[in-house]
Image (tube, rainbow, N blue to C red; front, side, top):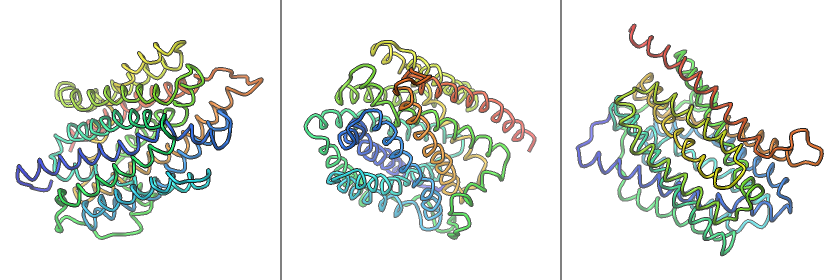
Length: 412
């Protein structure tokens, strides 16, 4: 853990949280309008479903490649320059997507966004640098709450701006990323002192080399698979949520934006206010498993909801999944050294990116298949039910692996 004075540590945490908010606002703004913009290019809701899945997969695929590189670069050169370069890169990318004349330009924009958004690995490594192991679940909960705050403002703004023009949210997103860069340029202290930095190595920086770290402990590999399942299930939202809401309930951009803002508020409450007390009372393992189970119940209810009101109410149990990610991250960071935190976060992001490639393609294809004439699965909510089953498997596996990890720690 890097030793910072009280005021500098608070300033560092404040920067990380504010930057997370600004970055996620920028990302969330385009959520309500990107599928609609794709549909405008291709002229079909069903075709837009699988193309949107491809776009999400492109973004995740680039994260798979770039995350371990960025994580290893931050272990070598420090967290500050990596975060700053990523934010200014995002600003330029949103400008590119704002002027995109066709799907190919949009695809290029998603590729660049996947690279620059990989700075999230460095944000988590930064928090690990400045917090003690027993405080990391709470620290990651705060980051999760900041992300959620961004998703409150982002989709809401995107829905409103999308009513003006489908391009307007991209321009606003560029401005948000630019503000994050300027703020970091003047306010961000470095968290990784030179004595604790690690030499850069392509052997560790490539995604497969980075994931070799996960094999260093059996429990790390198991927890990484839980991470995969969690992200696989939740990419049902990025793949089909907007299109499903429009098809099933007739919602427009502003209605989707309001609902996503509500989701963000719930996540912010869960991760910002409930993670710390829950971990203190029940421990990381039980909190993680309860969060995964609650998420499974919520997503299943979404898939079964016959009305928009019941679909909205299902967001409440679904929000409990916010208990899982901070505790899962905390369990994993305790099993590597300080100089490997960036590599670990890069490996985690690579695992999440594999899910991000496979899941949108899968759920997008399932959604498109359910809408085809003569389909043997004519139920558009099937994607949500499958996602719920995946999260339930993650809860069971998480309980088993975390219990084994606890036993291994007690025997050392």
